[in-house]
Length: 293
Image 1 (cartoon, rainbow, N blue to C red):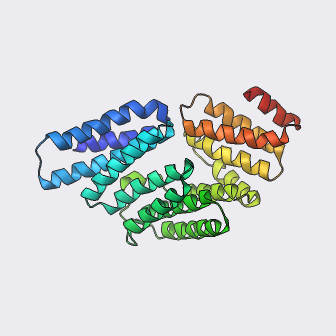
Image 2: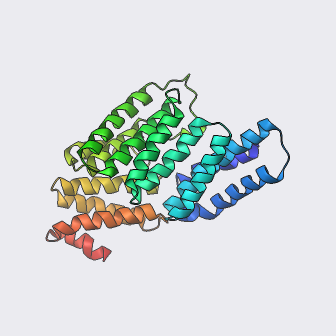
Image 3: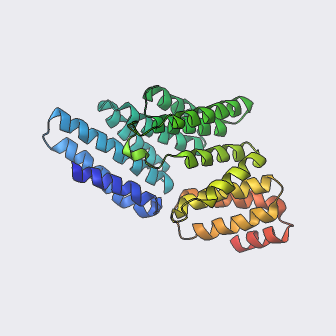
């Protein structure tokens, strides 16, 4: 069991540095192996529950990796299997992480209404007593789901959720028992989500300062995430009528993304180029558009 836990955590750490296209095979291999272990071996109730939890944790990271690789149907299948395992193990926090991860994918792939419903269900299912980092993350996903839903009512709901996420994280302490798989959730990540929401809502004067501050101290060895977050800065600059700045950031995003096997970064490059096309008469923009053609 300890060996399985280490392999699961190893995949999480690898995802910090490698993209979905690079990790898809090993992630699926570990996921299938864990399911076989549960189904084909004899074990006590306690060991069975621990196995179900590891299957759920594996499903979350494997689903995330599949989604990053653009394999959305496969990712949804994996997430739902993991959600079933977490529910059977009666681990509400893990179930919330899986449901929230799937909600995030739905929100980003044209199923916004389903994304809102599932993100809120993940938050409600985890409960008020969920660990601080977990509750903050699930509120962040609620904020994003409402942002993608569009309209003034969803915008207001998104802003409320962002405020509640910050409050939840501020309640974190050394005594709080946060799951190990939420090691990456911190104030900087919440700031990034806040800035992304502001960008999507076309409020660049709020988004740009936050993004510049957080990206200025961000670990650039996490190439995919750094490129993704820069992509929102590029769009925010364009929305702020700063095409030259947007072009400079866009050029960096394109360069960073060139060797990253991630459909998410590829999609963000397409979004940036479409936004910059409105400024095609600006020399710096035209150079970026021509090089990407």
